[in-house]
Image (tube, rainbow, N blue to C red; front, side):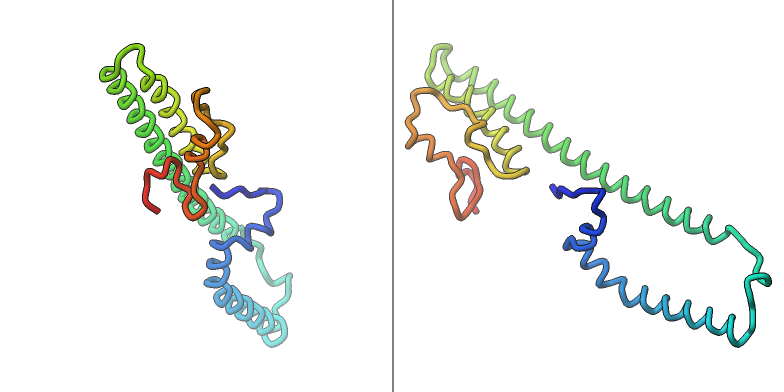
Length: 171
């Protein structure tokens, strides 16, 4: 997730995505600026047109408003699509962990040490997944059974070369 300050819009231009866009658009912007300067120079100096001979119009503002409106609609729709995809995947994760807990509940006995272990580790997995998507796993937010030693808790920390919690995925 990209954190940015909307009040500091100049920093948005230095973002990697914005740099590519600006690099692509810069030749077109410079070309249009020179073309506009040439047209203004020709109209004012050679054709001798002045302000009183031009009729004000709002057509350009309305055209720019339509283009800006379409741009904002497409951007809003793509942001909503990303949000909806994340919500769908998060709901799938919650449903999968709930199904796993129900199956473990049916398989294990009622007074089982493994049952207590899974009742702590399944929510830990979901919390660690959330934290991994944000800023990295915060080990102090996870709950471990009291009988675990510090050495056993260290096994659950992400490895230096890969940030995979529980080392389930190959990096």
